[in-house]
Length: 87
Image (tube, rainbow, N blue to C red; front, side, top):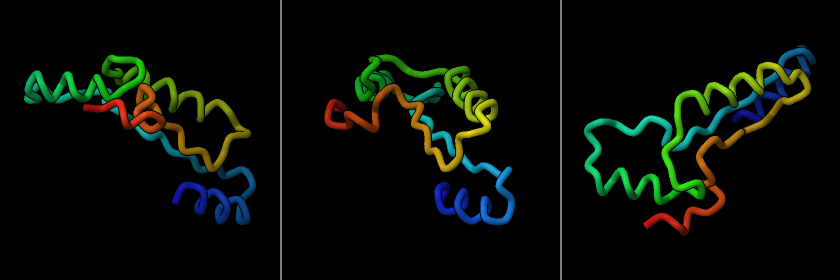
């Protein structure tokens, strides 16, 4: 959807950019039991939970870069490239 919107909206206004952040486990709920918390963290390549600040930095990057459009940026500690490590 991000890429399709970037293409369509650029036809109407080349200044319009469309990007998406794909967040990973940045804010694990307090109600999550310890084994589920460990599993979520083990599912990342960096072996830790993310933070809201990590997501905010990605948003800031895409806002400041006026040449990036149609980007789906995973901020997930490597989960999407190595899902087989979970569990």
